[in-house]
Length: 270
Image (cartoon, rainbow, N blue to C red; front, side):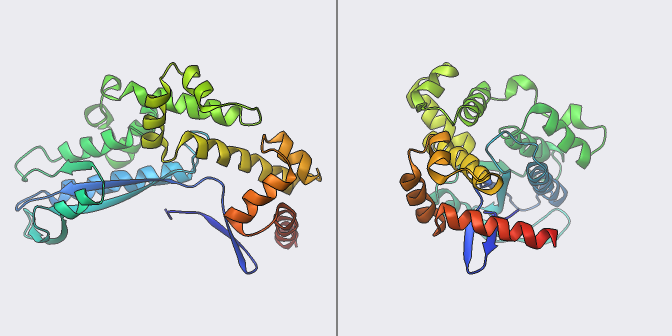
């Protein structure tokens, strides 16, 4: 899955409104680690990306992009239990970049699916339990009961944040505030802001703006409404403000966006 999804209009490139949320995961290995376990853990994240691309994720997010790095204490080549050598990055460099999600691959004599359980617990931050179980079933049919973390192990805070995100998306046409969203899910503003950035990959304000721009883009493509009326319907002020946002983000005016969308549709139909 690409970090961003784009459409090309002639010489211009317009980013789609919703981007995948980027997640960086480090898997720490040492001599004699289980190559099978590491491979299956990486596959968990690949399958999870597929679920996100298929639209299984919450409203307002176009999936999740997992960047997995294999790490060791000093970096360089590390030999697995099967004598295969794997090139790794130094864990210190990974931590300096601000990433914090770490999974540890134990020596081969440990239970081989321990790392898979850890990977499934990581993706449970992004998907509901039913989806996580389906990911486990795709990897190991019949093993989801053993591999998927129990519901109580999944932080309830993420569900509040997701409800808040859904509320923002559903009410984006109104003059709402971040305080309104935090109150809706019974969280303090400070905690809501912190958890929202962690779970959704953007600030609530940016998420709300993307939701409003998504609606404005659809109205431009699918209706003949004047730009000023579209801006008001999407709580984006007036046409001048909407044009300013479009030019800043995509280097084109709303009118140019509309005409290019319609030309593209005609080409597809032809």
